[in-house]
Length: 525
Image (cartoon, rainbow, N blue to C red; front, side, top):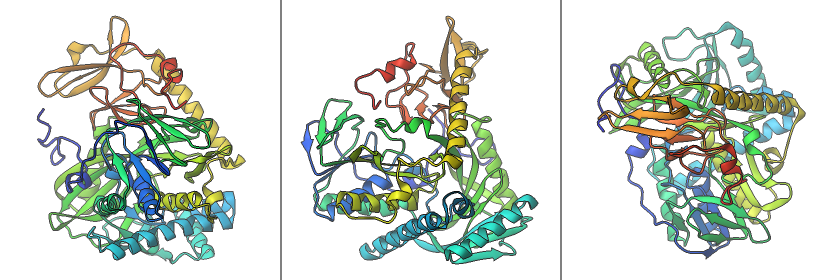
């Protein structure tokens, strides 16, 4: 398939993360046997690999199991800002949880930034690490007071920053808030070095090894799709969405959110710094070095996965924004990113339930995974070593705050139910004959809802549109050529293969029912 030609104007025809395209990572075999280790880590992103790095340094026997290829998920599609400035959160956290918990959240992420910087310095890792100030800004009058309140929270929490009158772009900015001395880097160059450290110290890594369940107990055992069993004293579930939920009900306590990224060569020089607006539509900027030349990442257009307008429109909107602000000569890469949002915006990191102390999870980073994932790994190390950690209660997955958790719990699950019912009742109007080349849509075949994509060569790919997670109906994502679930964010290729969980099984070629996965013996339910 020829997808490299430009789309509308400057946009590349295919989606490809610059991080993934700019580095060759080592390949690892598939697990074909049973193993017994100290710690089983499921997931080969930044959380799992940082955890493995820390634990092999403690002299523990560690195995990492990755369903696909290392760093090909959320980590490989990040915007790679290493910062404790996570939007307008500190005033909100102080109001909802108190000053102490707000301060702990800041300190956990500031400590994670320091750890990354110190690790880079210790190993002399060439990963484009650079200290940059981070800015929140608004062009809307109604957000000015919110930024002022956030600045007051910075002052109370001892955060180095404050309000500024302007940022160095030709935009109508009302006010901005800076957090000093944050950072950015090339995450895969950083993690490639950690992979070497892990394997040099005896850590074992397997790719193409899908984990589907856990047998809990004194020595929990991870079960793989191909029948291998891996036992350890601890299991760390670092799989973006937990591959095993137990009785934690994580499907009901998070929603998936997507955003989009362009890597562009601009006409105007980039002035330095990292920038995010605080209103909708979301807009974010940072520099990036591509082939020795400074370019710009243009990020934003957030929406719930599987919901919203035609996805290619989001890329077009970012291109227009970048052209207005910096002038775009060319767009070298475009890709999308996805992350999970918890009920109260604080990640779930720690024991999967209060009753199971040796199965740990890390999820819900709300697109701020570089620091939160590192904080998770540092917390995991202390739990495994049976050491106290000041952030354990803050991140505890068992927490549930009446405000705002209850309200968000009801809203998120009403949204899931609404999409579940809507998808079952919706009758597609298109037929196979209506599809042009490089077009996908839900269609009706013999009275049944199916998903069809006709590729650029005219070949037709048909799948069942029932998500293999809990049975919602997937929607076509034209921007990325995937089938996306609006309920919990699972994504599938146009041939039906799993691109992103929580679904573990591909879309079927036959009819699929909700109970098929819930009652399966190799499901995490």
